[in-house]
Image (tube, rainbow, N blue to C red; front, side, top):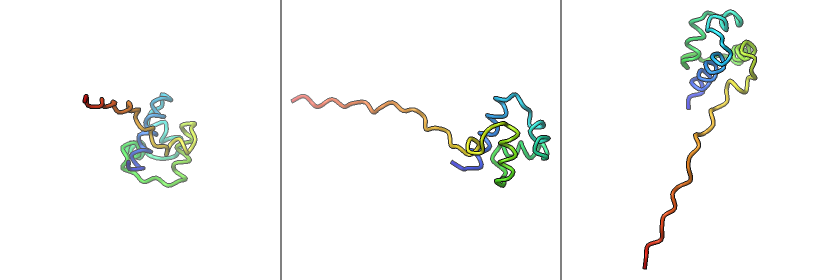
Length: 85
């Protein structure tokens, strides 16, 4: 997965979970609302410093912003029956 997209999805998820608007996050980090929108869409390539500011604004760790989502749970493969002899 593209890391920009992962970061964007995480930013959006944490922002929505916090009940904050893009405008509020933008004000907290000194950026434009359009920047936050583009960041959430994976269209920006933010610096580490910007990611740190976003993490602070969302009250999450920097590592949470860049963490890939867990792999979907998959059921174990079905067992095949041995052919009858």
